[in-house]
Each structure stands twice: as C-alpha cells, then as structure tokens.
Amino acid sequence: MSTGSISRTPICKLNDRELPYLYIKRDDLIPYCFGGNKARKAQLFFEEIDNGDYDTVVTYGSSHSNHCRIVANMAAARNMDCILISPTEVSDNTYNSIMMDLFGAKLITVPVNEVHDTIENTIAKLKDKGHKPYFIPGGGHGNIGTRAYVQCFDEILDYEKENDIKFDYIFFASGTGTTHAGLVCGQLIHKTCHNIIGISIARKNPRGRDVVLESIYDYLNESKISYDPEDVQNKTVFIDDYTGDGYGADSEMISQIIQKSLISYGVALDSTYTGKAFSGMLDYVKKNKLENKRILFIHTGGTPLFFDDLNKWRKK
Image 1: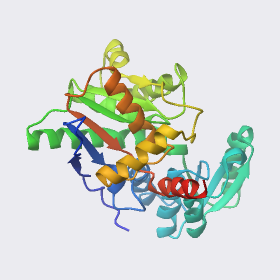
Image 2: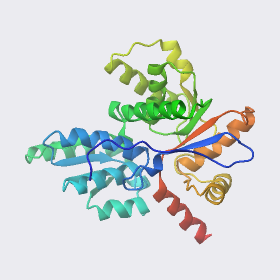
Image 3: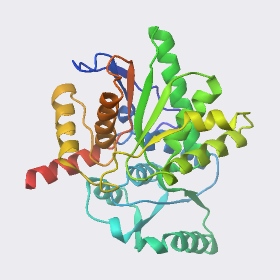
Image 4: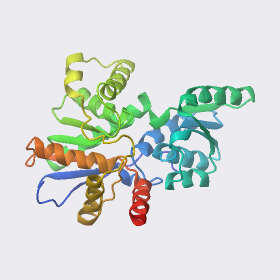
C-alpha cells in the first residue's frame, strides 16, 4: 500500500427538500479497506510504525471495531503480526471480525475488566521474546488520532474557500473522542466560528464531553498552542440525547433513517455510528429550527457495519 498521506475526501451536496443546504463529507471513501475515520487515523500511526523497526502491532476493540479492521489490514499489508485484545462481552461474529480473521490477526478475548492487564501482559511477553511491539490505543485515541482530524478540518476550510461557501454547522458521530477533539482543535487554531456538534453514539455527559476535552487539552498542550480555556469549553458541544440503549443499540427510527439515506442519497449509514449520528442531527436541526442553515455532516465510515444491519433486517 502507499505510505503517502490520505487524499482529500470529497464534500457533496445532498438533494434534500427539507434541508436545502445539507452537505456530506465522505470520509467513508478514503481509499483503504472501506475507509472511515479509523483509516484517516491509522495512516498516521503507521507512518510512525514505518519509521521505526517495529515487528508487531497491538491494539484493542470489539468484534464490531472499524479500528481493529483497519489496523489488521495495514499490518497484514506489511507482513507484520497483529494482536487484537477484545472484550468477551462484545465479541460476536461480524463482517469486521471476518476481515480481521482474513488479515491473519491474532485475537485475544477476555472479560472487559481484564482488558488493561491483558494488554500490558501481552506487550511485556512480546518484549521478553525479543519483539518490538507498537501499541495503538483503541479507536486510535491520543494526539495522533486528534491530529488526523485537525487535518480533516483543514480540508473543510479548503473546500469552503474553493467554493466560496461557509458551513454554519458541522455534525458527526462522537465516540472515543479524538475525531471530535481534532475538529475543535482545528477550529481553535484557525479561529473560525463554525458550530461543531458531536452527536454521542454511546457515552453520556459529563464523562463523554470530558473525554473530548481531555483530548483537546492534550493536543493543544503538546503542540504548544495557546488557548483560552473558556473558549475551549464553549466550542466543545457534545450532545448525548440520542445514545438510546447504548453502544451499537439500534432503533426503529435509526433503521428508517439508514434506509432513507440509501434510497434517497445512495449513501450507506450504520446503526452504531453514522446512522445514529445522522438521525440525531436531523432531530437536533428540527428542534433548533436550523433547516435553512448550511450544514455539513461528516460520514466517518463503518460500511461493514451497514451490512451487519442488512443481515439483521433480513432475518426479521
């Protein structure tokens, strides 16, 4: 695979009568293993791996994990060993897990409360055997993951300049936090006035927002970028009204939105991330009377999860 930077993903206007100024940024079209925000982040992690003499990649996530799929693929392309630590509680058979197996990743499944110690023990054993493992936090968490979405925000600004438009609101699925943090950091760096709205797919406030804030402060401090803490607080909007029954939990409304998106726009969403966030965005826009605002939705990927949804619907 190419080790160069990821090409800029397209922004397209959607044909929607109710939202005449609705656009979508297609990070699901990043040209690597179904793309998504995890591909954007993993590219930067593997640039660091390529510049070192690492021989094994260790990370963690569920059987649904887009992150684990991408990491396993990038490791396999380099003929590197890949070890995935996965919680037993969310380790069923999915299209993502099938691909992880195809890529030859070694899966270690343990109860969720044993994940941390298992990671530490696995890395220690690898080092004892003379290996040089590289650990990637779950979901691509950390400053490298945040930097990936600072770069994404730069792409959005380039699009606005090239097309002489300005997005009033930017919506996306907010999960482990670095996608959200990167966009806010990008806004703080460029001093823009976009309304950046993260729709939580699982976590509730205050913890969900605090995780995003921690990532923002970590990145700004490491990058030695000055900031006003009050400004950071004001620009970090984390909406937890649409988490439903938690991570990966579907609903009839989300299913309808996913089907409408595919039929009306030709865009596949999924019930874990993008479908839940898109559904939440539509409700938020309606409640706050934002129909005539220029809105950008960032499609953060998860296409294999869409096919998991199709299977569930077929069995009903």
